[in-house]
Amino acid sequence: VVVFRAYATTILLTLGGTVLGLLLQTMTAYVLARKTFTWRRAFSFFFYFTTLFSGGLVPYYLLITTTLGLRDSYLALLLPLMFSVYNLLIMKSYILGIPDSLIEAAKIDGCGEFRILFQIVVPLIKPALATVAILAFQASWNNAEISTYYVNNDMMRTFAFYLSSMIVGMGNNVAGRGILAAATLVMFIPNLLIFIFMQNKVLNTMAHSGIK
Image 1 (spheres, rainbow, N blue to C red):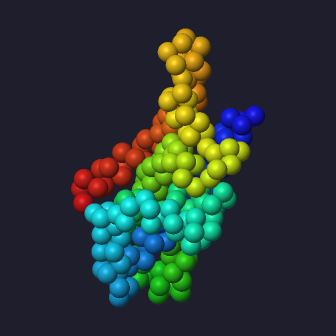
Image 2 (image 1 turned 180 degrees about the vertical axis):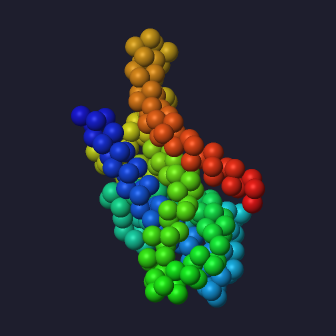
Image 3 (image 1 turned 180 degrees about the horizontal axis):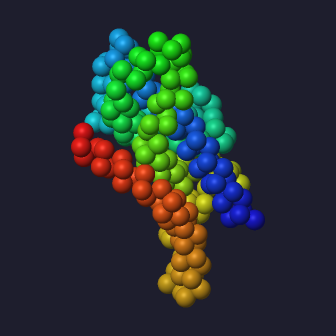
């Protein structure tokens, strides 16, 4: 029962983290790509700086558990999955390839920023969205650390946590290795399927990045 609950938790967290992450990162990337945003260089440097130097696990742990008081909550599992600076940089580089004249023409026609983003920009960056969706999905689906650090309730842990525990705890007996192989296959199949269905979009993003 616990394992099935963990699998359901993993599915919900992965879907929620991927969808909310795409929304948040797309809006952030759009703002940072707009040349009319005065502080775009400063904020871009701020995000880029975090990829070079990290504050470490302890400050982040204290932020989630003490400052926000989210220990043993699903929100503590969801928040770390909602944002990735690397995915943000992919989105930003793709949005920068959209001609400014297209956005200016939309403004002349009376479009607001949200309408420009969701009706003009988003359809043009579908390959980048697909790539970021795959990366976010894999990061969420395979994440075992969040269950280790932020929850003590076994009913709230993810399937990746139990899989990692099985890898450590299983002996060399045949039955144990068989169960471990089956669990690994269950974890691997969704990653394979999502890549198969979106591989063309990923290749388009890679080609675009190479040209840029």
